[in-house]
Image (cartoon, rainbow, N blue to C red; front, side, top):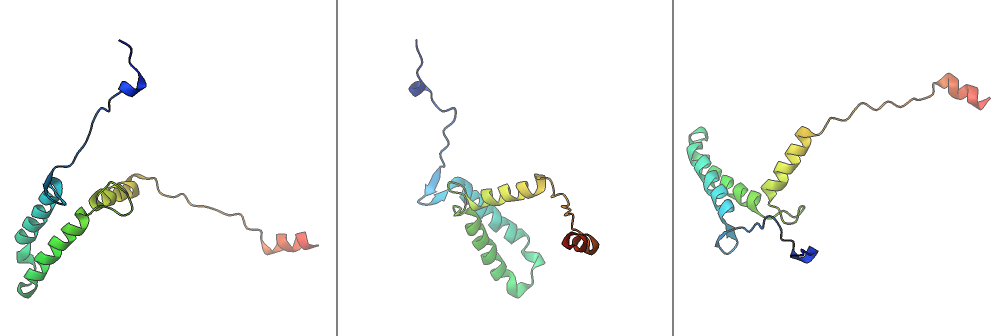
Length: 111
């Protein structure tokens, strides 16, 4: 049988599973994990600020799981992971040296 280019199928098709409208399984687990972390670490926060701490942690989880405005098709946590990996794995900039003429050299050129 002859195989044409139009018959080639992609190796992998990835779809996100929705729980309810706009909430996906991975996002749900990230938000639940953030709440569990906030609940377990609540003892480290002063008592009058514990409710603010829990609400703030959940709000941060909501922001992190939103779709990225910079990288279309990615979530904010994926964009942040990519940025951190890029910063850690890329080689540091080398020192750039510029040969500047000294005052004597520039005066000699003027003559």
